[in-house]
Length: 338
Image 1 (cartoon, helix red, strand yellow):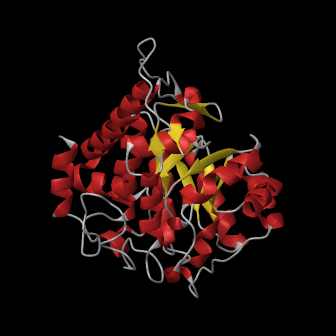
Image 2 (cartoon, rainbow, N blue to C red):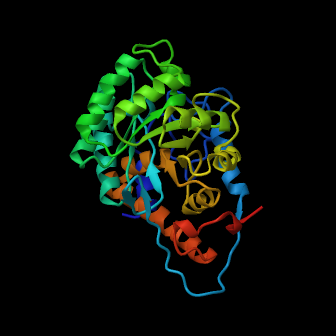
């Protein structure tokens, strides 16, 4: 099954809010919530996508032939590529009735594990969402990253029990999810977390812990103080706050402050292997991609996920070869044109 066939099939399976656009740039869904849209006027997702396209690449083909090695190691785990499937939850609310969260996670987590990467999984107001994610990760030998919403501490401890049972190699929290419109004033409650609360949670997790939703050096410092092993530079696709900068606009400032303290991942509008290359060149250790993996699952299940991973991997390898990068560590800022 080709990626083009996957996308064509997904058109008839996802709905009614997501249009499965040929380029997932946030324009068609804009401020559609429920659905994959952004908050307010809905231009943050669009800005995320556009900013990556403004960065250009320096070609260098004089030298020995390069057969790029795309593997990375993160907290002792080796992955075929420096990208992960991002967390998505409440599938029926946002993407139609074809899959519930259990079936979606079963397909995604398994397909990612089989193809050398891993999936971050979602969470939701229905406890079954996280339970299904944890179960899928357990079935795949812990090869997945369960992502907890910032509930109250009592609920978080219940989620941690599921993380332990799943044997997950890492755990995460999308700390910015406190701003999701459909989580406000609901039970269980979700909201901001103090450094002290996060520190306690990270200590209790007993595995590398990733804080997703960091957009400033100030936020990165707090994550470090709390003991995070990694952060994800993310504005949640504009779904939690309108009018933020794009992730590409803030990534390098955070990388420069970090100086290797934590691993840095980034998401937001990354749609190709070339975009992945740019993010790595700017200092990220890896990237997350969410919505296109939804299209892959709906368009071809595990085969669709494989087709998308193969597409991204081929694009990344081609870009590396044309820029003279033999492996991921060889990718540098000098390979970008500013």
